[in-house]
Length: 163
Image 1 (cartoon, rainbow, N blue to C red):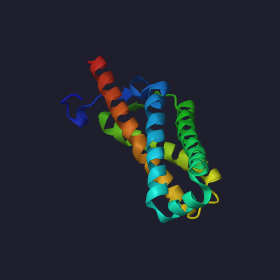
Image 2 (cartoon, helix red, strand yellow):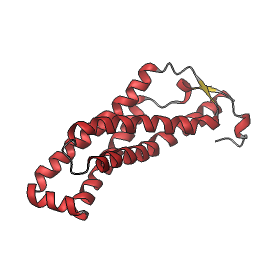
Image 3 (cartoon, rainbow, N blue to C red):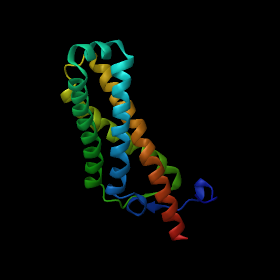
């Protein structure tokens, strides 16, 4: 980023700095898969409910159910981001100060999509509120870990190209 103060930052259209859908997905999907798998082992081995389910159902059925829920969560996050792109023209301009809230807002949108989709498969969960809260929070955090740097880097490049 340049050394210019935030107030002096030029307005740049979203289309000029937003990373491509392919670029976002190539980083977001593997990140969410890795987080989901780590969470599976944490759940199955470190929680009482997880150990009970592991004993009752066995490793493979529990893992396959988890992967189905993970796939739906990722599908929900990706669909939410794709829908946002579909309705956004990308013509609105942002200053550097507004890029971080924009990226976090898009992360919240992806987390909401993931939580909505996970609801359909986790309806029989022992503690549905905990499942949905964890889904939302983890998707928000790890989607932001992908989107925030991508948006800030894209803005800095667009700003440098403009100069």
